Image 1 (cartoon, rainbow, N blue to C red):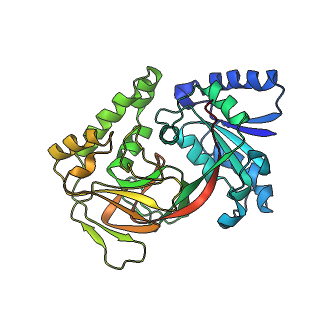
Image 2: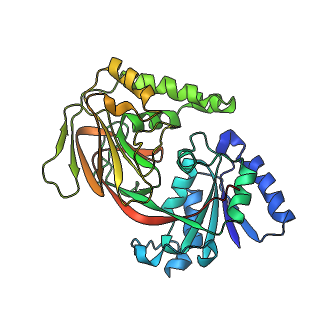
Length: 348
């Protein structure tokens, strides 16, 4: 039995039409399934929590500690008590991860229908949705990938006021990446932009991101940061923070290879640190990141760590897989090795 979690609003509202095509195939092949369609923000995490809570021996309000990695890594999809196929973009997948109560017993299939699709890009997936579905259904193997965890040590709202009422979770998962600084600020403005929604309907969403990115570059400000890697006590100091990205995969932001050497199952986060660059140099460097050649510029460095902490001189936006809710001046990130169990794609 397959459980489908569907975001009908993905792909600029075409997600529902794509699901109808996939549903016809499932019915035609007489493959057992149950579909769960989201209607509002928070639905996807709630649905995933309701599906996975019984696997953790609790109810949907009880989220257990991270499972031991030795419990997972079963090598066939049928070995997992629950098989969930998520249809949506990177943000949909991210929301689904927040609801998983037991990763070790959950096999996740992913049909990307978003605008960025950086997870699928790194996995080399270029098939249309119906072919992706068929590939997942006939797969006999799993892909075990790392899962990132972001902890917000403090939180601030858009106006810079502290958030202490527990309305925002201090801990969240990410599959692809988590940034503080420029990238997160672009995501925050894009997610709240009416212009983005309009351009998405025309298939021109990237124009919105370009315009927003240029606006954010002009308003980066002078914020310093200290980067603490693993147990090394002395920080790496950035006189001016532009971006600090921790990544499990190579791509983010719709194809930027900010961490071209990232490996999805090595138990480490690759880090792209962009420091004190003037606007002109940033504009020269950013296009080279599509090919992963941006480290040739001074003040753009790469690091690798299992855990790291960032302390900034004032709050900056933070995102996980493009999802933004708060600003912070102190964040901690860690990598849970091979904690995410994907149904692998069969391309032939």
